[in-house]
Image (cartoon, rainbow, N blue to C red; front, side):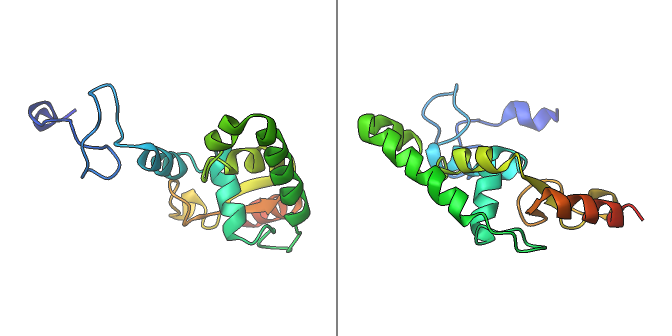
Amino acid sequence: MPLDYLEKDHDLCAWCNVKSIPTLRHKYCGKLCRESAYLFCYPQGYPSKGNLLMKQHWACTLCGLDYEEMVRKTIKRILKMAENDPERLLWNELPGIFYPIGHKISGSMDLDHIKPIHKGGVGLGNRNHQVICRTCHRRKTSLDRR
């Protein structure tokens, strides 16, 4: 750790570095910065997978396998649970709503680096990531290893 780090005040948000943090026990100024940092730093997490799948119009980018119906059923289930417990819906606001979607698709889709890390691809963020079906992922990985 550099010595200049010890001399600085750490009362600014670790993500936006603009707004003040509520207490020194916090890293982020609010929910939006906290969730944005999570999506960037953990692209393999369920919320990130759900967010990427939405950007891909709910389909595998390579073969076009469509997951829209499964996503609709997942969102219906969340809304039905929220009827009895409105607080639960608040917890699942965007991008938190992506957690159950990402969890549901994880059994049939994988996160893939568009450009492999060993060939100079970036590991963090979502610019070098895509969510693809398992069949396409196996095929692409074998081609990338050549």
